[in-house]
Image (cartoon, rainbow, N blue to C red; front, top):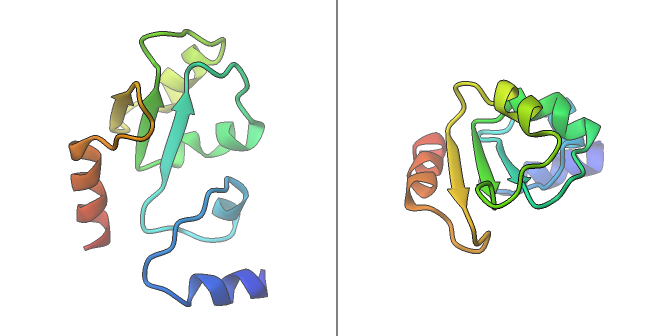
Length: 102
């Protein structure tokens, strides 16, 4: 953790893709990406889903994984941004991120 802490403190903007890190730090913003076309849902992701500031739902209208009911309940009140192409960021998500980091 000390090596990671120096990295985190090295820049005002840092993106970390990890569920584990949320056990140790409180980020300015926590965005969870849910791929509805993937059946697997890690236990670590289940633990932190309710703490997300926003959820990006990829291919939500196309697939219905077994974890759908769990996710719907855990995400109550969390802004959700649906997208078919994970490479295109919805403008409303960009706006949300700007409000969190400004």
